[in-house]
Image (cartoon, rainbow, N blue to C red; front, top):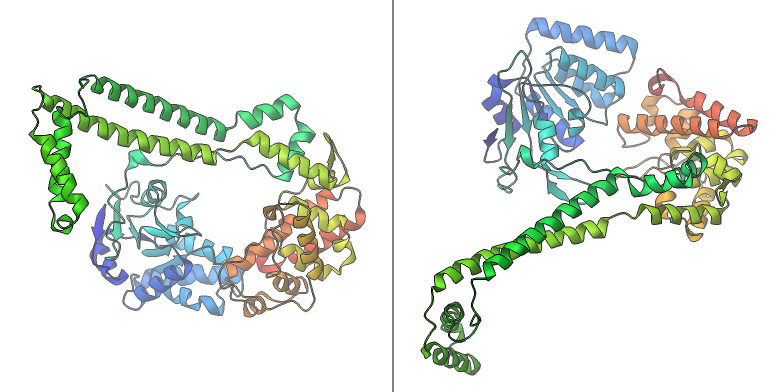
Length: 518
């Protein structure tokens, strides 16, 4: 791994590593990938005339299959691709991301600026990888990359059959010189198991599993196993260190800590030197303490090999510091340990209170929610309250777009031409009835986009209604299409509800956002 200091620009970084291209240049925001690509594009053009012809041909073929592939927002990407430069992030339309990936695989993109999602799931090796930074925003704070995150991206460096070694370059911001140098492959964090006890989890277990099977799943899942195993290992290490400290302490005699003990006298001499500093000289209580220490030091010390005790004392102090850290980790494990049995029973009680189950028997609401896999309670209540069947289809499309949607910072969408207060009232009622907020996640923000798309508005017009990126809009509508399929299946013999869900789904599943192959 090479480290580049003094906050170089991306042009300076590429100048330094130009013999080790193609490169994946990782940045940790969508805007940053586009900004860096533009910056590099002002000075660099990597393609030969022949390569430019190949890129034009691939772009032309992609546009023939998807007219309007490059929206006004993405005309800069077309120009950059013709220079052998690209960017890739979740805000791009799927077909445009596919084009960038195919150009990269064809070795027609020499520098690809991308977010960390590019390193997950698909194998796209490079001669080298570059880190714009080793700090990222995790939704709550800026923090250093984990070892696992770093090596997931760094591992893209080195192409089999092309490169003898893969090179990793880290751009160091001079404000954070400590942000690298600590990544170790043998310290990669383990993948942690996590069982989510949702209403659907409880309903599925009650429907399909016996009491014994449910108990076994809740008490012996991977998450519990990992936490129990780590806690056991930590307690064993604590016991080992405590035994070692006890063994070392055997060299101490009964006079330890008394006036005749040389270890105690060493401690007194250190205190006396500290009290001789000028800031303590004129304090009466300090003067008395100095005199007291001097009197104690005038007394004779015990004749013994005190250096052995001094060495043991230092070792014990280090052991105690390690034991303290282990106890701190054990406390964290206990604090965050999930009692899955308790969580299961808590959600079960809630479902009984809401009329989804009676004991182990699933009632109509429960049978419906069994087939819903996102915000089960909210979606079920939207159906059983009559809100969906009593609303015009365009409003239903608007309502369902907001299910499980959590707006990001500064996201803006034009408001819909109708009120969605009835959904807000239902949501408030559920929360007041004891339903946790994370079981009632809904936002009105994407409503107008789904409504406009349902009514046949073109994708370019959708972009004019919002500052969301194309990929975000694709995600909103495709997630709603999936939810409509779930509702259609859950409706069972309710032909009106199944027909409503099917008709809205077919209207949404078109043109650019069509879900292919389903």
